[in-house]
Image (cartoon, rainbow, N blue to C red; front, side, top):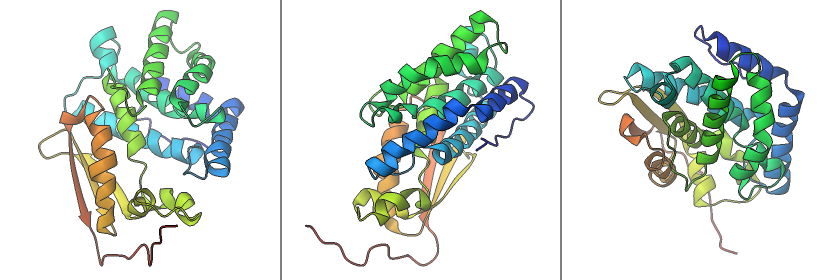
Length: 257
């Protein structure tokens, strides 16, 4: 499955995406991650669909931030450019969950074991050795920092962390919900109808969440708020949510067993 990213003239990103799309090893790791997540643990998708969604979200977030005057860390610290930041974000999104093939527990750190040879393969010949090494470190940092309790030290890692949290539209919760695991997590996730990203009115980025049921507030107030607060870039975001249309009933009856 191709990532289908809008390249906006970024040739280096285009070459990296071509290599990602052709990689049998990576596509196998994505599929195998879902064997762990869906088949064995009965949680939601952490495979190719999740990757495609969050990579597109992350790229849009990064571009909105740059448009709003936020300078990517690889520009500030290494004097590279915003197009290189896009490559970092793309690779980190593509590789952040592959540790699931080993285990869900501490999968962020397990991803760090599997990611380096893939990063090197995808960057080889596109960058000189020095720049390739810098980008590899930045990608690994973003993978590590998507863990809930790790504070990102770069704009790019913060973008990946927030993008990961924004894969929350209702269809993304159907797997745990339909396997009988009705909880505040699955019910509130089912209430999220649409996630919209746009230029903010007072801050660079506005995240607007459309909900079919007010239970979706849990996703915003508990889960998204936490990821934002621990992203290192939360001052650049404004978040709104609204229930659209007639409020939809999600659960008919709930029993504690």
